Amino acid sequence: MVPPVSTSTIPASSRSVAPPGAPGARVPSQFIGLARQLRQRIGAEQQGVDAAVERLIRPLRPKPGFTPMARHAFLRRIAAEWGALPSAGRLGLVAEFSADDGLRIADLRCRSVRMQLPGWADGGDELGIAVTLTLVGCRPPLFVHEHRLLVDVGLHALGRRYQRASREDAAVLADLRVLAEAHPSAVLSEDREFVIVASGGRWRGSITRVKSDGVMCARTFVA
Image (cartoon, rainbow, N blue to C red; front, top):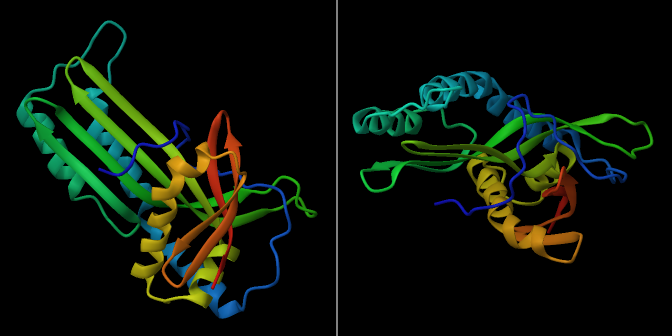
């Protein structure tokens, strides 16, 4: 099971928020290019995944005056179909059903986002990747669906990761999972800055707030 984390609910169109501060020295264009390509591959499947998720959970969602009582076979099929969703941006998945616990889904994914950057001199945005956790639980009549924002990584930080460690996409995604796994302890720390050890280096960044919840914003990656 991916670790339980903050409770930030974000819309499927994901517009993330990063902390103030200059983006730092320019990253060589070849590494920004690799970061951009990864973001594009993740974004290419995003709309289809969102639509499929809504199709799967819509029959489980209570309505005024009506609470669905899904059969075991139906919940088991949802778990199987969820596991078969496109996986280019997926960092981890639990999708299972049991008669005792019902349907349990925890889907850790990257999303293509445009990060809002309040406080930057030009007031602009930065393209980036967000790591989110979708949680679904159904043991009729109980139903839970949450979508949590854990981590924001702009193209600058992602480009530094490509520059300073393995350039294989799988290795980069594994290091994004390292950030997500560090989220629970990082946001509870009194420190507003974080340094997270990953393969070939360290993510550095700060904790910002979306509503009342902590989000890790990776600013760079150093060797």
